[in-house]
Image 1 (cartoon, helix red, strand yellow):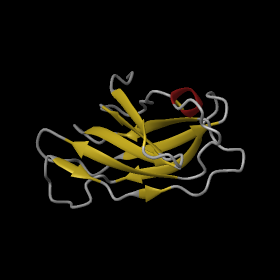
Image 2: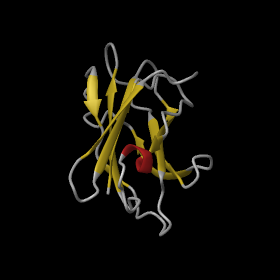
Image 3: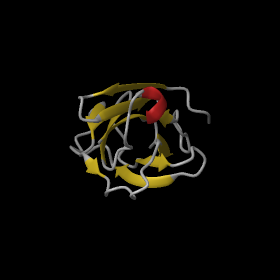
Length: 137
């Protein structure tokens, strides 16, 4: 399926920390909008070197455990590297209709730095809608 969600992004502070969220992932294999940090944040002097991310999951009744969402980075906007993967959004395992994952931290990025970022939904889990958020610095 083709992703039909939306993206929000913002600069969090003057020290080069940014966040972006993408919502509405409801099928396996969907890739979100590509975030171009240099285009979005005019005047950015250096690409981020670290990221952390989390995932919210919602369902009409109870969240399904088996989910996988990857934060990906690219130097050229064409070739993507997996930076972090969030699995099992239902951390409380309580069967509620909306739950959040633990924060997942990516390892430090290569020295070259990434300009482009996106989320890629590997497994949405039966009936879930996933909404990941990343913080980059």
